[in-house]
Length: 198
Ligand SMILES: [Zn+2]
Image (cartoon, rainbow, N blue to C red; front, side, top):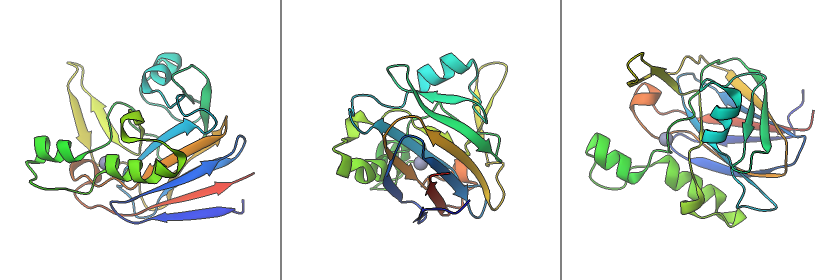
């Protein structure tokens, strides 16, 4: 497969891109142990967006992988996962934000964060911060314990692990290289993205 467009997302930053129906989006972890948040909107009507709740409901699992679809808030398929060498992703967490770093890390000041990076990346598509909801937490390794508590572990990814999604509608997409500590094993690295037709 020859990539038609490649994006290199530097550590703790993001990228915005248009994806047409039928095109493929491959998100690659070049070094391993790096989470990427993926948020997407119907490019022709940005009131339609990725929905964690609907995706988990219709798939009957919170661990989405090859063969599963990601749905919109209007219950339309938005992506289909066609390849997944990582095998573990999250879909429960809002993007890390300035407030999260204040609350959970007692960070005083503006820490780089996925919410700001998604907002900046999606601004060219007239998408504003308040429209961004729970992204697909690509490569996030979350454990749900029997008592319902959650634990974040380092991603299971090694260098080159990736997930490939087919767009089921024309999309505006934001992808980040997550800026947080814990979920990236305290080492924030880059994410690579490829967009291709077949
Ligand atoms: Zn993040």
